Image (cartoon, rainbow, N blue to C red):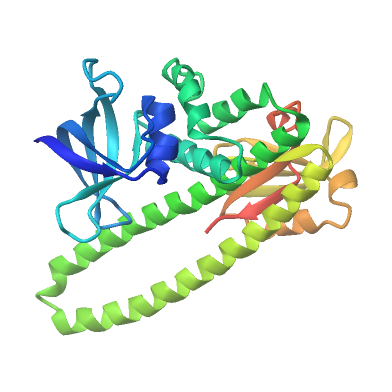
Length: 323
């Protein structure tokens, strides 16, 4: 346990522009050095070895006598000098939810839909639990926006969600590679030369797989962006489902008076595609049949002013493969 740490906060970085304002009610107008108290090192970041995670407390600069606020802080020491810089910070316990929220905040700011001043005003709502995740944030903003701006923030949210899924997948991959590497190291002393040969082959295989994954992401991302654009032109938003394994595809299933392609996912839920209207040439059905056993996400076009109208009823319009 380190009692106190001095941390640099850069005025234009994500932490000061997005994370601190909404989660802690703090925004610094210029580069500053602040203090973290009761710091506990939680270990090295899974992706960036120059970053550490800390549980710590921070005081509000405008009210130093108030009780310090507990949070999760990610710090970077890029040059190994012992001088830490704040990368991001959050207060919730679910890292995935916080990652979605952080990326949505950043994307909305980049797209000109949010400012630190707006987030400071929203901080009390965050404390009440009203906007402590990505979907709640977008819903909160949509209450006071015109239709065109609602479409923009939903498009920003979808991009942030897709980017976050990619990051989370990379983190999971990094953890698995670390686990595999540690297992290899334990056995290396007995089969050193053989292990070297195996590692070299695996490195080539891993690089080839990484290249294939990158190409897949780019292809599916472009396809999703094109669908989102078509949905916006229809005053709709292409709602993405959570990732799951595609277990089965059934054709020509009657559902509410229509013939549908029905997919069954790993959590036993079913999703329906009205083929006469949305898959006349059978392209989506054929794509789904090729993805059985793989991780997928589906889209459903919901009206901008009626989120979840069709997606909550189990319908889908297209299907995307995850690596």
